[in-house]
Image (cartoon, rainbow, N blue to C red):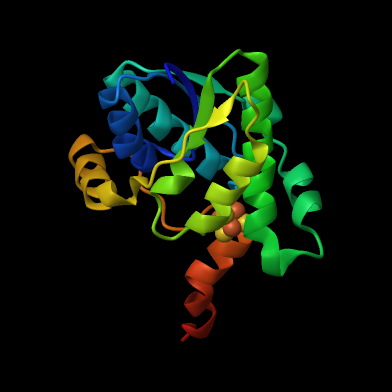
Length: 182
Ligand code: SF4
């Protein structure tokens, strides 16, 4: 599969993923499309981390700042908050496959398959559902390179986020703050 579109969620997750795909001989283009990252200032930090890694590795990235519309993301998960990650993955992977098909990519995949904190099997199943004969889903279990991604991102000074992305995950990450008033 020579020509692959890689959906990228942030800088640290892209390191091992890009290195693996490049080592396998793929021609890789990144795609930064993540309306699930809140607030906007956090989105910018992760986008810039992604671009810094891509520049080091000589990879071009399509950046969809013009499609950063958290309102649409909130509408997609409204009243389905308990299953929000599925809808969040679907929104991002559906857009990835559209861009991959229109751009004549042979395949697509995502850095979401690198994270130990994501629902790996759900992401893989979605990727398989969304593939077509022309644009295949390139499944890899990138989690094997988990520690390498952490170590290299620290060494390179790439921005490392403290929560998954959405306002809900930020609340879960910091909920103890509510208990800590004097
Ligand atoms: S926790 Fe992460 S994957 Fe789940 S909905 Fe929020 S941003 Fe998306």
